[in-house]
Image 1 (cartoon, rainbow, N blue to C red):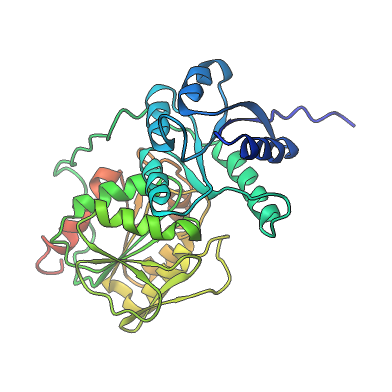
Image 2: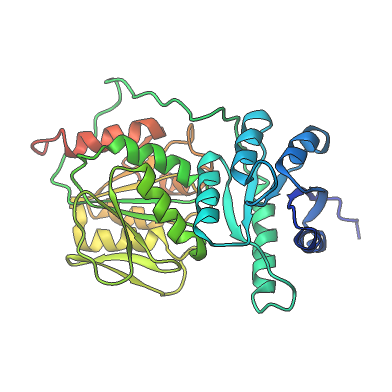
Length: 355
């Protein structure tokens, strides 16, 4: 039998607690896919060793001496872009804010830090951490110096096949989603006339912080749906943590049915419910994300007569979910991120009569 020479993923651990650092080194070192490239106690140290170690992925703590995890993420993404997985031990409001802002700054995922081996959740959290590190190491991140400047497309963009009397917008995003959402939601503007339903893949413990962050960056009132909720324009709705979001008749509902494409909430669940309830009066947008969640649901939307838009490969951090939707023939139009809000405004605010 030939030996397995598959290269292991090199992980840089950034963690100031000696106990947690040793635990993370043990967890990562025990996974056959991974190896420890180095372990440091601060963001400043991480920056010093980054070029010499050239890790494939970074496990980044939130609370660090000196610069915190957000500041370290910003510096790394500006100086030597490297996939970053934020690992947070606390779900206090300040830590949640830092974690979600780190996602907006270029981190790819935020996970709960595993407790000791005696904890009931240890094995599941440890396994998830290793899997996320292995997967995110494959993402090709790009240099970021502050906020990217997004220009609006010219009038030579192809016009949509149909204007219409739309009633609701559904958006699905995953890896790289927070940053994309910040640009899209801001560009839609406070006069956008439709309720917005959003599925973003994020850990249940970080949902509250994510919703609070959304409220600070978008012009809409953000509501976490926990029970029956009647959607209204000027509002953005996200499901409670670890719940699917559906539209049924005139109400939004959540449930804990089985995950779809390993996700709960699932974009496919949301889009399929919109197809059933709204048909051609729905708008669906599928943004950056790993895997295939949302693609089959978007196909249901298009088959029901809705208008569907996928983020183009030229701007998607991970062109996984949008690519699958394109492959299935579920997409009316693929657009770079800066063009999506303009198209949605054309379809709603600027459209007076169907064409």
